[in-house]
Length: 350
Image 1 (cartoon, one colour):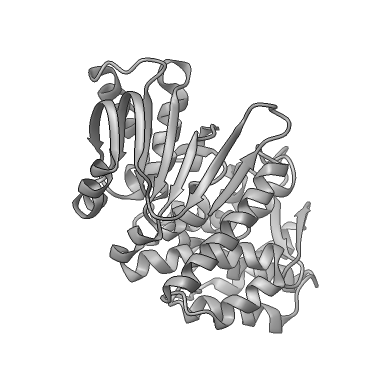
Image 2: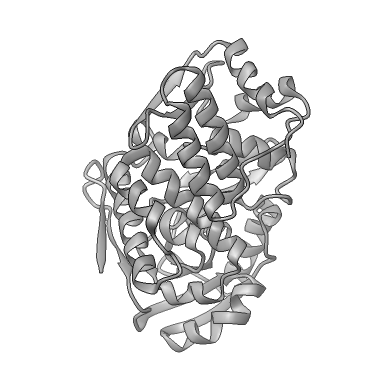
């Protein structure tokens, strides 16, 4: 199955997202695969058997969100120089969202930009992170605050890579799937309530629907000037949680799941969503063993972290909130007291 990405305003950026068994890939250039020890241990031999290139090298970087830094990008860049890549060379991101974000960012920097290809191996990266060209790294101020919009040349999604994925990582990907359904498609949300995502055909259908939704959004708004910002539902809160816990306590999708619950509480408080709808979403998250509670220790500090979010501007926080299930609203200038009242609901939880 092919899902096309076409960015009309560029006139030139077009590429395909292929959802199928990994094809044979041939490149008449110098290729560097970027991966981590976990993915390499499970799948690197298979990938290498599917690739032919003039030269082929593998760069292995540490596994984990805490290594998604400029220092790791510099390590990848050093390897690119050591292997004498030129402007016609290619990087392949082979791993989850962390690997994809860092590899894409490195590609955007090396000699002012070389091509890269995404081969995502986690559910979260297959349905979300690998699609749309967001690249970047974290720093002490927050998540993905250093980066670039830089589109890949192709994305190859092979569900077979998910067979070795730990249940916790799988669930983290489900959080992003639920996010898209809540924002855009009530029928899809109802489908997910009944779906057995461990059934192979159901999983393929779920990946397809999620990728098509993401592609539909990106094709309209590559650089998050409008509707693409809606994909950050749960992230405004979730990024604060990740930052407060040093990116070590929660997987990204887990933090987003908690962030969705917090965003829903704010939506209920503002009359955008019923309590019953919020509970329906919470129940679906819990069905997949995702966390839905977080103990906020200092409401004032949590609130101040919002201003480091990329979606805040001119001292105003932009919240992405559900309008029922299947609808969305971008809300700014919510009274500080109203937001803090909702945050206080999460004091002492966890």
